[in-house]
Length: 117
Length: 141
Picture 1 (cartoon, each protein chain N blue to C red):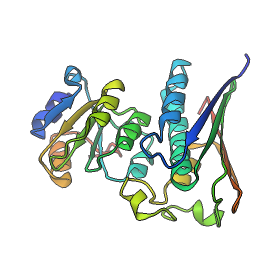
Picture 2 (spheres, chains in turn yellow, red):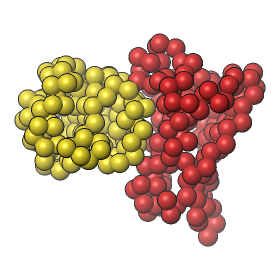
Picture 3 (cartoon, rainbow over the protein chains, first blue to last red):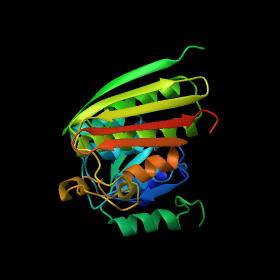
Picture 4 (cartoon, rainbow over the protein chains, first blue to last red):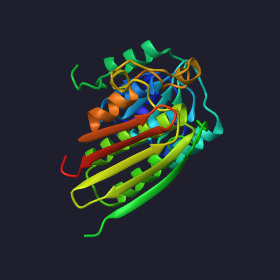
């Protein structure tokens, strides 16, 4: 699906990278623990998290992720947004909690890390 | 082909800056045209190591050497050292504080992740002196 579809499914607000919404994403990962995100080397395009610091962007960068979704309506500060923008990532904020946000994307066909639905 | 050497100083106790060296290395490796998988594996190893330097030691130095067939990454700090290396290599073992856990790390996955993605890893550590981690990632991996 496209990042624009992710935005629509999550009823999210795009905070940076609006010009990249037509990029395709094929898998996602939801975690507040960055080492768990780093434990899977496979392609993961979208990171959903409730954690709000620069290391979220760094982790996404190491993993070549294209989109970060902050759950529970969290809004990152300008430092986080500008680093994500510099690394070519879309950042959005959704009002849904982690479980619901992941469930919505999964039900819509965005697969998990393991690549198995 | 001569090797390429990259050197970075990592500042201690500056959590916001943690990852800057790994980020810089990743961009250089990508520009060299190495495979995405190799770049990602090396980046994960380096980033976890860099985070460890910031969390546990007061920074340190990172040297990355690109050989025709492999990357060698050496992370050296003069921090407190690792008291029990066997425990530290085990998933879930951590001596990190709650404040570090609040930041998304300190769950005892750092060294295990590095071991998982490096083709070879050696850790030398002496309590009160410091820790040196050497990792190799093969370019054909």
